[in-house]
Image 1 (cartoon, rainbow, N blue to C red):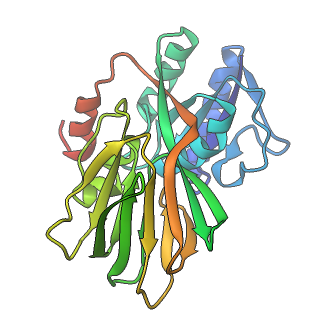
Image 2: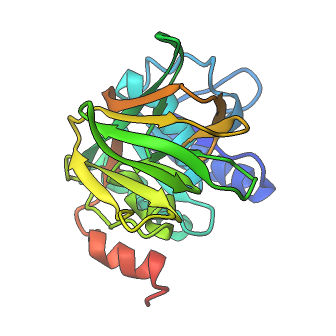
Length: 279
């Protein structure tokens, strides 16, 4: 068995804890996939790393770290164990205090492998695809840091839903339903549902409720009558400028993120603990 350890290196605490995880795995006779400088990989520099020969990865950080790693490892079909070193850590399956027992459960094959579908986003300009992205959580079209309304038209399966004047729109997976979409009034959806959530952000319209549609749907956002370029953001991390007339076409991706989950973890119990500060 070969394992990679990937860590958010912004915190020295994270890096030190990664070292203890590596030592623990070595004592369990696990082969560590390492780079030339340190045994752990830093999450902000994994884009050019060849991870094809590993069985699973330990990811230390918060939700942002999990999202970064998931996009890189999903095409390789590599399962992730997320260990929360951040604040919420909704995508993580173990807390720092439970990290070593979580590893033991994996070594004993005492876990479930969740498959989380992802979204593919193509930006079409003058009939030509000029950019493509994948996202595990969500795709957002808005003005970014500028507080102003955006004009856009929304279609689902080439049928017009509505034209909006709003702060923007969020298209989220069930995995991302507890993120930005939730904060904007979208529904919480269990991760095993095959749906996509479309949530307008602060719409100036009576018809502005979130929409839940099949994951097989083709969703299109077209901006119009805007004075400046809008902002396309995927998973809250990557950005791209969108101009009037651009088509932002969103479909289910042909890759999935594999997340290790433990049998004694209840999704709704996690909702209480992470979102309601419930003890």
